[in-house]
Length: 273
Image (cartoon, rainbow, N blue to C red; front, top):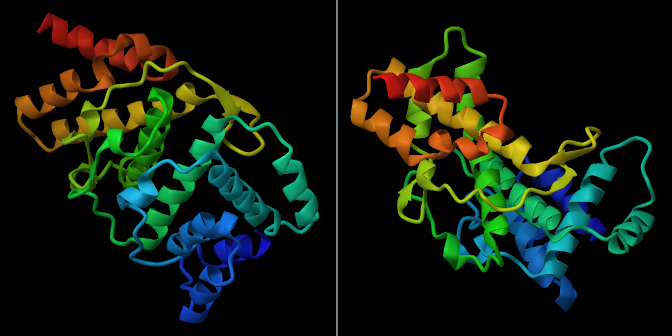
């Protein structure tokens, strides 16, 4: 696992592995690490197959834990004051990790690699069939969805938050490249009523509510989409489809976002109109 972690660190971003390195990753691999090594090989390769059903499907728990450990080693070997990697492996093997934390790690690794390696961004022809990926419950589906949309939202964040005034035209071009879920537009996925849980999401910030962290970011994406529709003079139908077809209208979820008052004011205006 240490060697896989080193390869992941060296090639997860812009650097491309040689054919010899890829061959080495896949050769002489213990049977229990084969699935994990196949994932790492894809994760460090451009134009990979990570969005195929075989990789989108939820791995077994032992594979999830192996990848969690590999990513932890990757973080460790980037530090000057490193923990001995073998001790780190032992401690994580014995650590009681929530399966949801492992699921979060897996899809974060997957979509990070899609973002780093599959350029330019365009998921407009991608349709995620959420019932085809061996998820065990709605929470696991929700984690995958929120991680995916967090990745997608990064493509518009700069245009909406850094550029002054916001470049809504460019942001909207990227929004049109967002994927579908279950044959529907991305925002029509609304299954977020799973029980909230806590984990360390951002290193050093301690334990956080998962839904408060990710739904807050997702609401920001939806509001950015709405602003783009308004600024780019899109049709009332398109605006209403977003407002009424997404969780923008789901007041029971507003407690998870700092945009609660904005959302309430939007629907108060529409009620008056």
